[in-house]
Image (cartoon, rainbow, N blue to C red; front, side, top):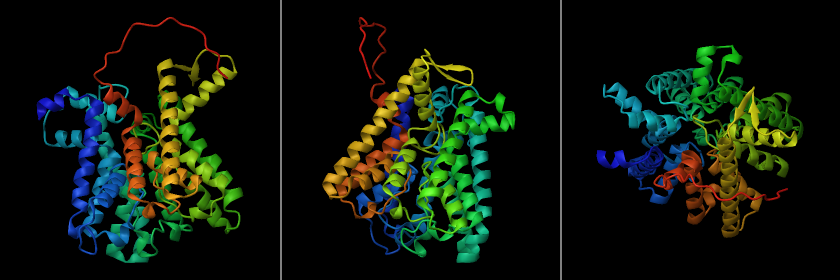
Length: 442
């Protein structure tokens, strides 16, 4: 077994690791005592739920609160935690705690798993990630506990606070609010400042990436000392929250009371960062609002975070490249630094890949199910962006559509480029170049 693992590339280890955890989670959720009815859940539904949990998406075929038992909830929560922090992060942490030496192969895989720039200091960074994760999740649970305890009682309230804190931090979007109304998410807490602030903060912190945490911990408020990547992530994330929130406030939620408009606009803008919670009824969005949600869900969070999607840095590179072309500059620049051509090519490839996956998946589901295309595109964007927001069609889709969503969730979590690099890991890079000839575009 060890010999086989040594022969695998880092990308292949990550891909197979996620697949193994999903399969194990599916088998556990099939057990009779994992459901409240005490019956065996069919493999397709268990696989969908396990994939959604490990890929921190939040799309569901059964209401989490009313279908699954306490054991099922615990399994889902563990899968969310493993998927959010990353398979490799958990494995390295366990090895470090057990006193085993971390091999170079493990360090290299960890580097790829969290999108670190170098192998050096990766074990220290792993310990930092584990520690900060526990701190953030505990703080989130403490903030939400008063409201949940008031609503559900002490014991249940504490459990709900812990569950939703981990789910929010890992950008998973699983909730237990089905006890109030099936598939209601957090709509009953749209006016609660504590719930809104806690969940938004957890989503944002989990979505900006582990390396950005490290930068902020080291340099505090000295923004100039941050890595260029951290600067790009923070600036892009801030813009992607502020501008959509203003649109939602003025055009989508105009009929609601002022407090609901403010909290609802901010929350929906933040949750599209691949979180999957919602505090308003998304079926009441206009077509423009649905289209904006789709774009935001496709962008997702940041590299090396608990979030999925194309990533904020991908969008930033593409937009900056366009600006460079408009201004007749030869290179893409950020904060006085030049971006390499390989990064620009990767960003363009990711954009094409995600656009192809979500458009193809949406068109196929629309044709199979006979549903409006925009509604199906919302669902596929949510899946490939590992968001979990839905217009309510997921539970009623057929098995083929569910398989499409499973594949999209899996691809969105492990990363399209990771899958490609894994498939082509045996190919050697050619140094030969073909003759060059100009091609007119645009």
